[in-house]
Length: 130
Image (tube, rainbow, N blue to C red):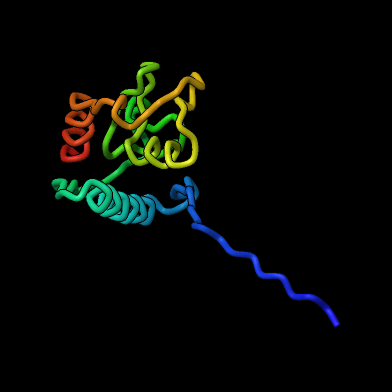
C-alpha cells in the first residue's frame, strides 16, 4: 500500500509578457488585457478607484517605463529609498515575503515607498498618445 501525499499551495503567480513573435495586433491586445488585469488588482489592493488607462502598448516601450524587477511596463510607479523605481504591485508582493529593499537588503516597509507621480503622469500621457 502506498502512502499518498498532498501538496498545498498558498498562492500562485504567473509572470509573463506577450511574445515578440506574436502579430503586433495580437501583442497589443495581450498588453491591453494585462493592463486591465493589473489595474484591477491595484484597485482592489488600494481599496479605491484608479482611472482606467486605455493602454495600446507598442513594441518599443521607453526603458524608463519598465519595472526593473518584472520587466513589465509599470502602472503605478514608485521610488524606493535606494532610488530605484519599480511598480507598486511588484514591491508590495516582495514586501509580503521579505521586509527588505530588494536592491540593498536594508529593512523596508511600504510606508517608506514613495509614489513617482511625475513618471506615472508621463506613462499615462505616453499611453494616451498611442
